[in-house]
Amino acid sequence: MTETTKPDGTMAASGIQVAAVYGFSRIADPEGLRADLEQVCRAGGVRGTLLIAHEGVNGTIAGPNEGVGAVLELIRAQPGLAAPEIKYARADLMPFHRLKVRLKAEIVTMGRPDIDPANGAGTYVAAEDWNALIADPDTLVIDTRNAYEGEIGAFAHAVQPNTSGFRDFPAWFEAEGRALIAERKPTRVAMYCTGGIRCEKASALLKADGVDDVRHLHGGILRYLETVPEAQSLWHGECFVFDERVSVGHGLAVGDHVLCRGCRMPVSPAGQASSRFVEGVCCDRCFDDRTPEQQASYAERRRQMEIADRRGAAHIGEAARQPPRRTL
Image (cartoon, rainbow, N blue to C red; front, side, top):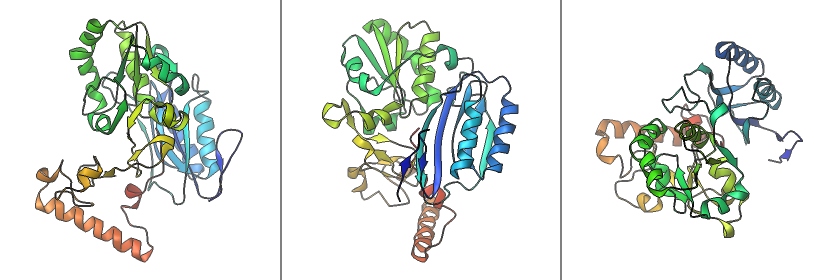
């Protein structure tokens, strides 16, 4: 497929336009915006998921170039959202079965809807400036992702909270993070995540708690891997992504991990060599937690997908198996 980049950053090509978008801004009338976005999406043949809360907008959508463009234009028209974070991709087939435009308490769930990233977040740090920041011994680097993400890749010397979900981050900070900052007395704190949204919100949590100098990686790990040459990189391992690539490395090259269909966790090459790893069914992590009936169900799902592949037909699980190349 031939693709060209248009002046507005979108890609002109055949196929489906995909856009992952987020932006923090105080939305005065979330229900009104939800209704307007749903109307524009349906009129433009756009599917996917958009979440709207008082703190902003977040989601991934797909459809014709014009339809996706109209949705993004409406988002940009909201006060404070003239320049939301957007990452574009292409898909040969529509990756979503339906459209969901939903109201939420938070666009990225931390369990703290009182935190205001629109007005209280830390300072953006560009990918090309990140190395100098985190190489400074006076900088405390904190990974705001989940434990399984940190296991397969991280920046050098980063603190790993080892949370199971972003909702656990405030509790970690209360129990350990605040004491860690008091002990090390860093001049500044630098935070990062996959695409930028979690570390931006986490930076607002620290700022609200009185940490003066908090910075976060603009565009997240993915922009860093796309921007910084491997020879100069301080990133080690691979970055987990929430799509069918599973993990990526420098230059966003697809990594060596695969996804376990039983627990939805990344499986390393060593894990794939385990006798307890069954493609499409289970891995070492979940082998003992799945009943024989569940394993049989997963195996049947995989078999049906393989049959659909041989026939050249779409299977109901196709959207989950081959989503677009999202990068937030």
